[in-house]
Image (cartoon, rainbow, N blue to C red; front, side):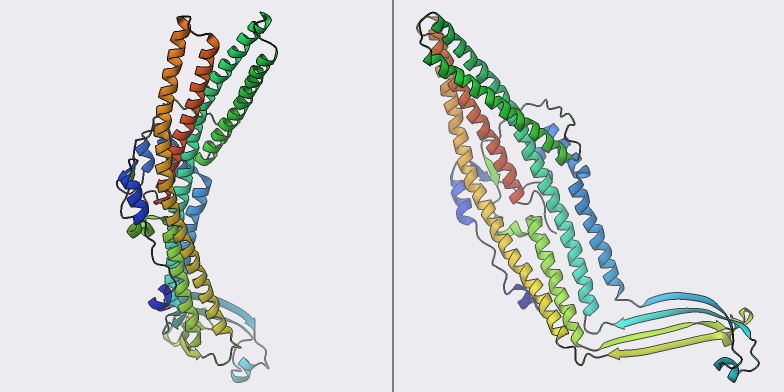
Length: 456
């Protein structure tokens, strides 16, 4: 296909200038570089570093995808072999009884009845690629090999980002579990205090019932968070490439993220070569374009050279004499005259496959830029919410401290203090959820920017 045909239906690269300008004018994004190839090390968590490094070596999905590279590479070698003459060595020793009335002895009556024909030769075949059929098939195979390499990088990116997300989900859920346990104890003590007051005729039966219901609700939350923690552990182990019940020794504290996310400013210009999924689709399109060229070559004559060079003799004793040498060459060509439209239909099939790949590429590039734009908007929102939630937690903690001091001085009762600490725990739970959302935005933005991949 001509270059014009290949690009005429490809969308122009979208612009993200407005989205970038909006977030950089705020206080939660700053200009920075593209993610590094080992982007996970920027979080400073040695446990996560070890898990991802192990996953990149042992995850079955990554190992399976890597085999596609070997497959595609060898398919390219096979396609490339068609560009050269193919030479084979043949050797045989044919033992036979010659018929007295047969063809051989009719012309050579002195031949022995029992004879053997010894044959050593090199046979060769070569199809002259005047119309570029095999060159196109070779370049198509190379394109598929490069697509497989990019697909492997995409698989590694998906697994590593999924593992990082699962790891931080596990760490934040472990913190949530601790907070839920504290909340349960607070509600239990609150209920027990009300029960004492009811028995002392200071409360009716209705008020402690509400508190008891709140205790049951807290117990339900504990069951739920234990399930989430277990599922997080299973997912982390599976992504690493090990059994779900392998113990995970997690001792590092969960640190807050930086106050600002960094983002490159040349996203529109470089996102194509930074995302392995986009480059894989580009190489698929390139391969299909060459397959169209190979299909078109079938309209033209096919030129072949076939022959052999070797030795042939009835007795072994004369096999290596010059008189036993034999040589044969058979030039041939074939020209399609009438194929009932098969060749043209095959070209149209290849073109349809190519344009299907083009439209898939257009869809992918639009979704890729949408993903980045969405994450920029979500990041600004989540980081803003997290900043305000930290202020809310500080105020709730200050309020609890005041209630606690008032209780010590006899100005308030313990019920008020329990209410204040429960509100503080609820605010902390919201805060830890927002921390996880910050990690998710950061990891997702890394994935949408290619995770350190760069096509050269």
